[in-house]
Image 1 (cartoon, rainbow, N blue to C red):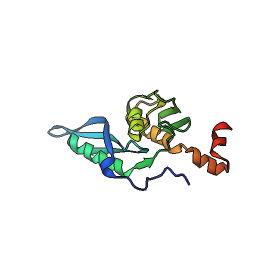
Image 2 (image 1 turned 45 degrees about the vertical axis):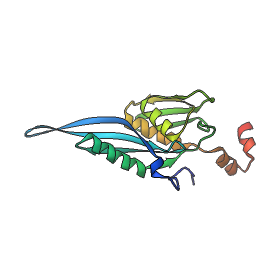
Image 3 (image 1 turned 90 degrees about the vertical axis):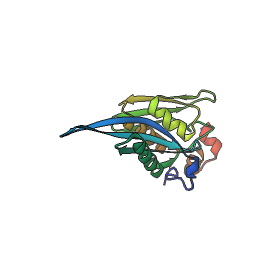
Image 4 (image 1 turned 45 degrees about the horizontal axis):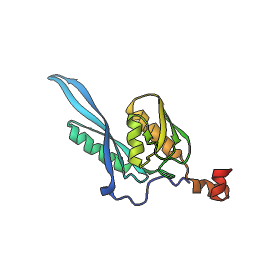
Length: 171
């Protein structure tokens, strides 16, 4: 079973939220147009825990608050190695397709929009990332989370292969 499911203990006061996108939706009714808002929010503690959520409401602030609550219910643990990802990985969701690669220290987060929010909230400081396919923030965020969920920590790989940790890196 994968170890990067729901994190065991996360202090909710440590979580920082980032609003990725706010969308205004109009519903035409008898008296005119009725507007509502949807907000995509990413939360993370900057130490390997990240989650995303969607909130919908008639006011922007309410939509963001609902998004934060939803994101706190969908937290995942991300394996990290020296402030980067352990290995290259591709993630896919619907039309969204992302590629995430480890980077040398000092590179920074080279990623666009929604992907940057997810990676920075997770606490990843050096990474190369490319979004291919759909640029819809919903799909890009879910594809990034998919890629991070498929990541495996080096010690986990060593245990599964029954080899020493050095052998994982040096072949």
